[in-house]
Length: 150
Image 1: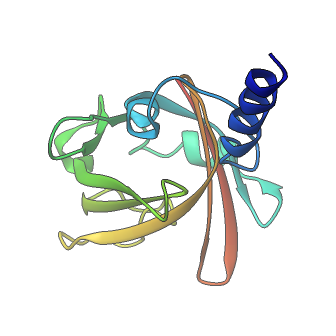
Image 2 (image 1 turned 180 degrees about the vertical axis):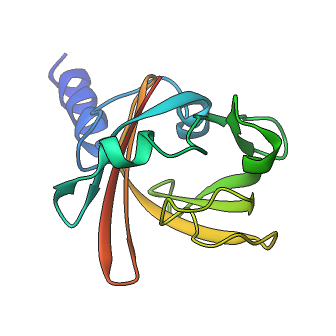
């Protein structure tokens, strides 16, 4: 009985993958990324910039599909704001890399400027649950923390 209890404790402690949790999940990291998210918090160097981001004309829900291609796109936007891309997990599922393509400008680190070229952004995952994803990155010497919720 003690061996089973110690084994379960080791499993729980070894599965704490992300800084902010969760401690244990029965769903794979890829399955937890899948979903349609709103940006609920957007910080730049510790300053809350959420209102500035969600007020942008090209702001929309962010959809992560988990099909073979792992596509990402923003929903409910006019064609002039069309953005698509792909995503993948790396570094033992601790990082997510998103390749953006389109005209989603003005919301770094998603890319600045009006260009049809791919912009690749790599984020460290801080929290990944069934309904939340918290990510961070440094872009142009600025640290961004983005909290997404379904």
